[in-house]
Length: 192
Image 1 (cartoon, rainbow, N blue to C red):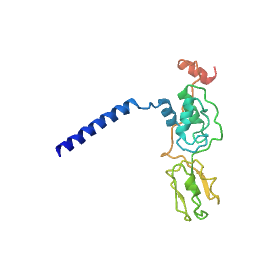
Image 2: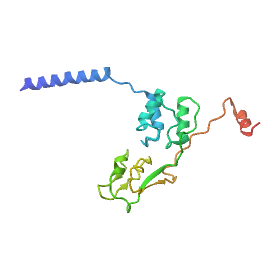
Image 3: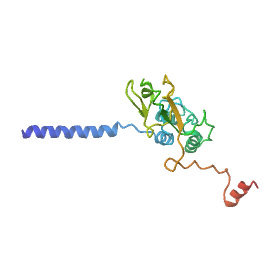
Image 4: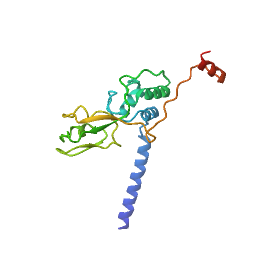
């Protein structure tokens, strides 16, 4: 009995050492730039940029395969934040900037087809087949992917009013280049 316990213990120790060595030797290094870009994206997973989510879009930006101005939910503020991170001039936003919104289902019109549930990338819509559906507003990212598959057009996008709970600091304005001290800043502000 003791021999079996000691054998299993030695085997577990050997496997543990091997797995520890393998995890260090075979570790895949993540690009820190991808992580930084991904953190600046709005995480709506809406695919409006042409990629299936924010992470693949961040990877494409880091590889230089995608422009930084393809995120309508993030707006021009996100474009400027990414330009600041990458040290490039911020281009204009591609597409139309929209205020943050949330989907609302007109429940008396809903037929329970579940097509909106299947389209939602963040599982913010709940319901059962042939039953009324509803949106979990806290989980909804406003991606609008549920609008197109709805056969009865019972989903509306409602702008989220800005309150103290959801208000965010705006990206700071860029200062003109070549301004060194306070007197230069004042002269640039007054135009003289």
